[in-house]
Length: 597
Image (cartoon, rainbow, N blue to C red; front, side, top):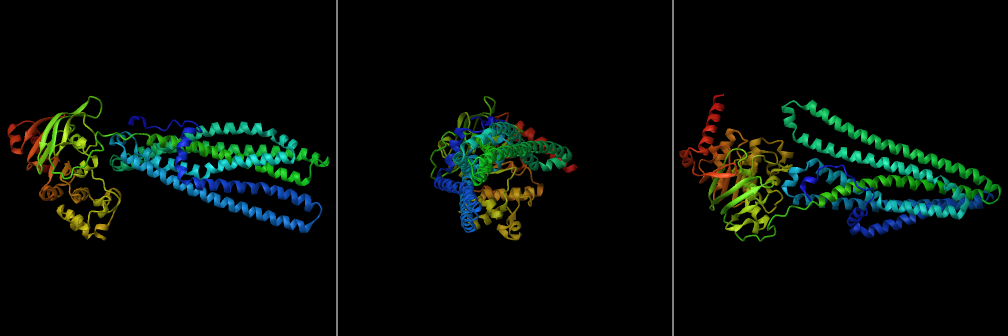
């Protein structure tokens, strides 16, 4: 499945799709014994519910009419016992179905999240995060509702309807058929409701996903919104999307509010027919007064499951729509990397060889063209070039975020496509310009879930990047709270934390992708002082806009329009007076201008 196709919410598919339902029921398979028990309890509870009108009929005909007070007391106790039994069955059955719903919800949510972690980065580039969050939250919640209050209850409603019809036919088949004369009206009302509710639900789901996507995007970009004073414009747009969602909900509420009174009116008409015709039956001695009361109670119960089924239709519609989108996500195959299941080398030295590498994100639009260079173990290589030259693409290929189309990249003489992806990534550490800090504490942000990293190793990493004193002076030290996205840290502190994170994993290859371009001069000097310790005994690839940070590199590679144009040391490249020389002069003038200002 193409990553481009998973974007909009419009298509909902059928109200009931057997293929989707079969896939959904697989999640209930581990809890099939709970389901069977719930169905048994439901049948028992429904049977007791049907016995209640029978007890009323017996009480009226056998004890009230003859004036047998003692017998009326006994039948009252039996009625109360049946009522209590129905309550117990209903309570336990509801608890079990809710338990099933929560377990299935947990399983599906875990599967979706695990699947998201396997998907290629290109997928996240092309799909709004808000919609993906909707899958894991809202859509899974809808499926929980189907399993907890829909799946078993639909079966119970159908069983109840069949039982009531059988009981009505048993008491008086002529009166039953006459009462069913209003059913065509009920069918028409239900059909109209289904059609209208389906469209209303389509609108609700579409607008909800749009709202989630809008909020996620603009909360992340709040700094930009406030910087350019776009609060009112964004609020107005949010108001429009939110108003559309509210209007869609109102339409859904309107159809529900109209449908149930219609059912009540049809029920009242049916009751009027029963009373009118039943009275003649009693006069003709063809029906007892108790049987008429029981008949009326059964007929009233006949409409309860019909109303409930209308609600369950909405749940089923929601579940089919949500499951369709969830399975569309789960059916999005992770983009297979060549040699993904390769072996892990016993020991990595850190030698890298790029041999005639060609790479394009789309078709034949190559961003890297015939790139070849070698990095020896322990060597420090810098890559420079204008924006769009292909520097970050090189790093993406090295970490196997993408696969190249031509050539080869070798780690210690072995093509990385013939090695385990995990092994390749564990041998390296990447420090980016835009640091992502998770909520939690300093220790968890450095370990990233790897509990094998001891505290002393974390502290040593913090010392090497000159962040130890700041962290340990915080209340709680390593376990001080860190807010979401590092809200309590400065840009420089977040950058230093990312350095410590990389060092704690002790990689053989360290990659710095413009890691100092977003920090102030003082912090940059602090990082520069630690660089010698950071890079000791490690192969390093350094991408930098600030050329002053790479003057001591063993080798500098100049990329231009996806090709290597110059290779050499700092002074050698300056002497050539080529691209590197021009970049250096341009940056020198900019720095001089900033200093003057």
